[in-house]
Amino acid sequence: MDTTVIVLLVIAAIIVLAVGWYLVRQRQEQQLEERRVEAGEQRSLAETKAREAEQARLAAEEQAERARARADEAEELRRQADDVDPDVEVDAAEDAVDEKDRV
Image 1 (cartoon, rainbow, N blue to C red):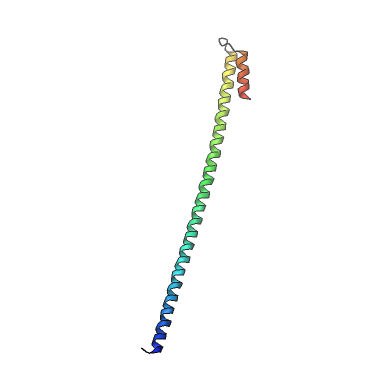
Image 2 (image 1 turned 135 degrees about the vertical axis):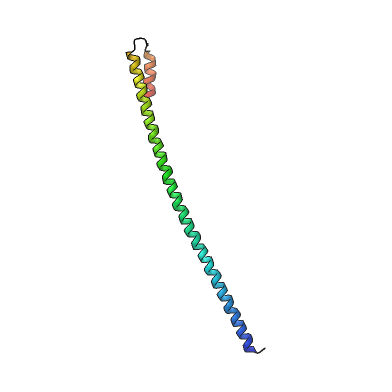
């Protein structure tokens, strides 16, 4: 083989390897970018879920507060009924304990 042919083959091989390396590198960069986008989407979804969970927690707290208020109202109505009912003996000590519970 002529030296020129060998040199051309070596140069062609180097070019093929360089192009192959460049293509592999491009694919790796593309995959990294795809993973970054996917991670961003997952973070966005996680933030949305966290906001929904916080809203649900706040709604549950509000509902619990309304339930406590209704229970307090029912207890007050029961006390008023006991005060009005002539057949019920209202114990002063029981009222004091009840008052302590309310505070």
